[in-house]
Amino acid sequence: MSRRYFGTDGIRGRTNQWPMTAELAMKVGMAAGKHFQRGSHRHRVVIGKDTRLSGYMVENALVAGFTAVGMDVVQFGPIPTPAVALLAHSMRADLGVMISASHNPYADNGIKLFGPDGYKLSDEDELKIEAMLEQDIPLAAPSEIGRARRVEDARGRYIHAVKSSFPADLRLDGLKIVVDCANGAAYQVAPSAFWELGAEVIAIGVTPNGININDGCGSTSPLLCQETVVSSGADIGIALDGDADRLIVVDEKGQIVDGDQIMALIATNFARDGSLRGGGLVATVMSNLGLERHLAGHGISLERTKVGDRYVLERMREGGFNVGGEQSGHMILSDYATTGDGTVAALQVLAALVRSGKPASEVLHRFDPVPQLLKNVRFSGGKPLEHEEVKRVIAQAEGELNGCGRLVIRPSGTEPVIRVMAEGDREDQVKDVVERICDAVARVAA
Image 1: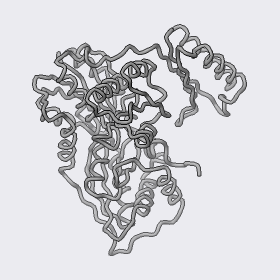
Image 2 (image 1 turned 180 degrees about the vertical axis):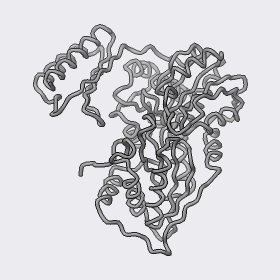
Image 3 (image 1 turned 135 degrees about the vertical axis):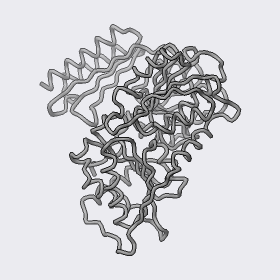
Image 4 (image 1 turned 30 degrees about the vertical axis):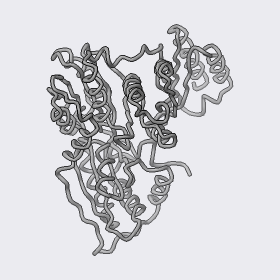
């Protein structure tokens, strides 16, 4: 059965346009609520959201849907995605919901669902919910309609949980940290967590107004964090995205440290301490070849998946890995969280910084990335990658890069675009093969 509503990270789109309408949100609440009514106990769903203006609309529609089928609702207000996953499990909820479009602009929104174990739903569960969206869903009897209430201490519970991931023998005293919360879900919790551990915190991106989430700030726009680190003389910068499941770090010189470098740091430290499980880490096909070579030098394997933290987590669970992530900054540390958590990952980085006593620029830059280039080619229809001419050019490029580079070519899952990425030891060769493949795709797609 093909998917109509759910993508790789829940349901997402521009608000007040299909599928992100109040009407569909209410139907999702009804369908997901009915699907997770298992057993005779009183059923409960927890709901969190980021700071988008449309969050009010989507939240109220979901509450209507859930209560209509007899589920009680606990509302958290603005809180990170990993907090919803954590609290769904700790509060013995049957379901967790996060209303967010992550790093997208404010006009978009999304619905992410978590099961009672705190993990994102399986394909099987999502397909069953999708099927119910096309049906009439039985409503609860008047006496069985659900109740809704707000929990005001959800943020405090999450702060306590993330602080417990930080080594008990360490403090952040003496560190000046810039924390950029992207005017998003972590605008209260992240600065508080770092401050409570002793850091001097310079908080930016903490004045959400409903439409400024991810706008010129956060992990996808780190320039503000870079400038603030340098101008304030901070030791390090922490940049989160709108729902705080993504992390980008800035060293004291204002240089960006991406997810590959962060994974290298955490994995090698875990391996040194004997706490790395699975024999390596899990990343996607987009992680730099330099990361793979660096890990191999430490006897650590790198397993690659399709793009998307969903696929990273699936492989981690299958193989018993406890470290995984994406170059873009999704960090999954399964010892502490069931989904990506930028704040937890940041605390692991800060622990390494404290233990070393060295500047961030020395601690965080673990390897030199090999030259990497990504270009997108838009097409109007058809399947350009199945064209014989495109196949021929790709095969030729793969032969040229054999042993000294990699080629990753894939269609976008959200728009009519072919993504062409190459990396290798020679920058001129990388640029040449990408341009040749892009030209071939453009010719057949014209």
